[in-house]
Image (cartoon, rainbow, N blue to C red; front, side, top):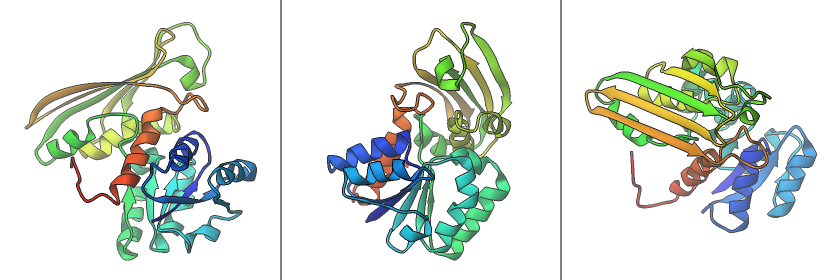
Length: 254
């Protein structure tokens, strides 16, 4: 399986490091970034190819990882799906827009392609997807991040946002993809609280879900990526595990 990646930032760097150690189970080959030098740098590490245009890789790949920005989901992903190529979307917050999500689903269906949305920086989505077979009555996410992860400088702990996930992803498009992942898994617009907290040194996500199945709570304390503190290492790991699972014959989890 040949893989291309769009967006050569923190997530792409982690995935490339795994490719260097031959731990992906697929061939990471093509790289695109608006900053050509970043694409060339990653490509050179694994004897890959940096392309100047996204279309230059589409006839050569089986699947594309979008690791750029929400705008790429709108502008680029439709073109990939129209080529019949599968896509892993990391900027999952863009899918909180029902029109965008429905459009991508239709294009994928019409072109026999698939859209994958990794679990990202939280745990428990397998259980939530199973729980959604019944009725989920309540789902909340409380996120605590150090100021640097939010691009801020403050010594005061304070709540930056409290409301629905659909609005949270608009206000914090590169910080709260977990809210979108949780909402999509639940099939509802979950309640979100975002707190900047100088006393924490990790990105912390607390999830509470209640429904017909019962109740569960999870807490994820993520190590931040050294390249970009806004990105949790677990988010990249979730994409790597998804890639590996595409070639596995024994699948655990929903």
